[in-house]
Length: 66
Image (cartoon, rainbow, N blue to C red; front, top):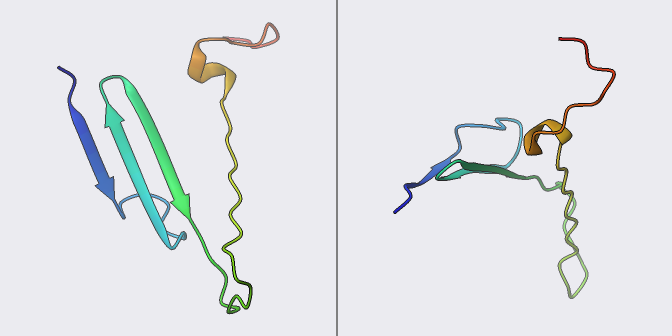
């Protein structure tokens, strides 16, 4: 099987929390931040920002000079 590794607090030092997960050749980093203002709502607003870079899937732009 593949090796699963979970590292917490080692990356994204300016975030309130971060996790780096490695599973085989796949690596995912997750960071969470929160403000100091108390929330007075009856729900927790959550925003997800997902960015897949071209080089992470092996696609290099044609104008890239090596």
